[in-house]
Image 1: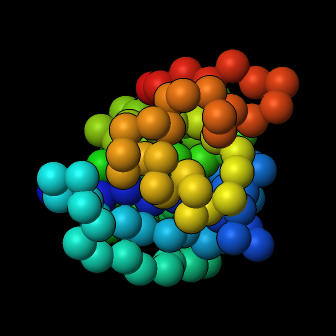
Image 2 (image 1 turned 30 degrees about the vertical axis):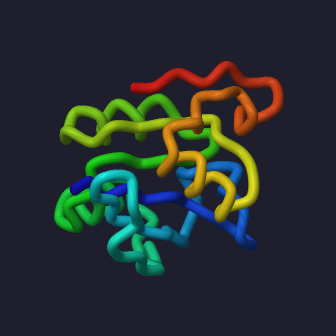
Length: 116
């Protein structure tokens, strides 16, 4: 089972994770969603957001733009970061579940996404 958090705003991937306040958390087992929840990030400090992610058992974070400092800290805590993603939240989740998120269809305009 994997637990993936998608930062979002207005039912789309949030353009900048550093200031995002909403997460859609999906637990996937054998390519099927087994549990979904909506979470609110109430803390503004980077270290507190990272602590929330680690304490929640998040394996992967899918997000829009993210500062290198934030991304490096999350990765150092053992969480995979998939940055510079854009698109409708439901479409991105479906692509994540079926393994097609890296197809290029969800790349943030002007960015070259790298899986960290």
